[in-house]
Image (tube, rainbow, N blue to C red; front, side, top):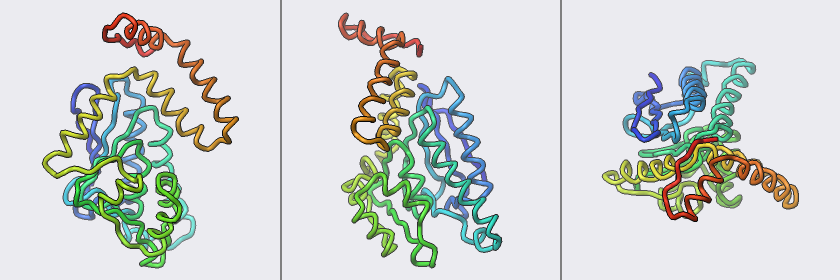
Length: 257
């Protein structure tokens, strides 16, 4: 059981959740590894985009139920769910764009992990679910991430029935961006990552932060906040370089300043 990091080149790094024997379950150890890996890559200036995937037959089955059952104490349960929440918050609040590349299944906290990523792509046969209700444990923390990506009625159906949904429907409701055949997904995801990596790191960082913060604000406050953020962005050298390059019909040379 481990978390692997692979350098795909052009500033794209891949994090692999590597515990195929448990369908990449999110145990204490695994969550700690994922969190520390994301924090490390977030501080790494050579990393521009992060791809997240699971090893083996699928993405992630969610929490390790054998471990969950063994915890017994209230304090240990709370520690586990808080740690999981920290991972999701790190992905959202981190400076680097994160793309989920999903195959097999993404269930419960695994589905939460997909929803927490900035972008998500899957194979056409992938299944998504928040099935906690089936075992008497409502997917309360997973629904925080997923309900911020899809409509309430569809979210409630997933939560109340526990029934899985197919990739094409996940795309339709906004849980993922798109789905591809197994033979195409690596190429398509890397194509998106490469495009993002070619932009100004500074601009992406400012934009990602602004995007999530403004979503939680009333309309007028959101406009005040984003006006300040665009002004901050405009004061950067990269904004001036980008505008100059556009007007001069050349490729920009980003300084990330």
